[in-house]
Length: 180
Image 1: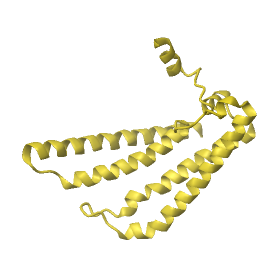
Image 2: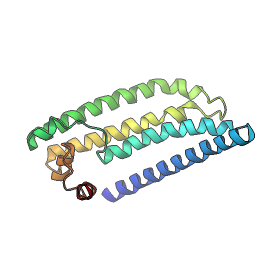
Image 3: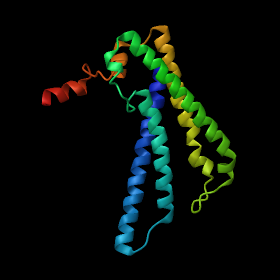
Image 4: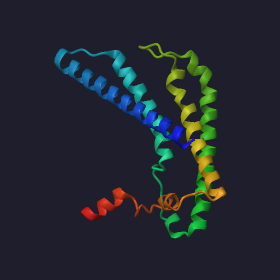
């Protein structure tokens, strides 16, 4: 299961690279065309906006797996292991609640978005905003699995320290400290 998960997330990271590269090519190409030839490609303007939406939401799931979302560890860093685990479970329950609301909102808008089409590419807007389904399910599932690891006692000490903002055993952090 871990291997399948790793392959899935490597695929998502590859997709993020492709989306970002395509955005750079389309935007740079349009800038060059506008300055040199006083023209542009309308499709690339629209697609780069949509790619940015996809990049944002898919990226949120990828960093959710790595626990790299912005957090405030001021209180959590002062707590012991039990307090940190309690805060972790409470924050994950809050994440699941937010994901449920986000999923429900995406569901409510799906019929409207399915019948609206992009002005230039004529893509159904459900293809653009439907990424909310993926993001809400992905982040909610990651939070639920983390709760299960805490409750079952399979939470690693390193992950618990990272939740509290302690990256002292992180190789990148150790390198930064040596350079300072």
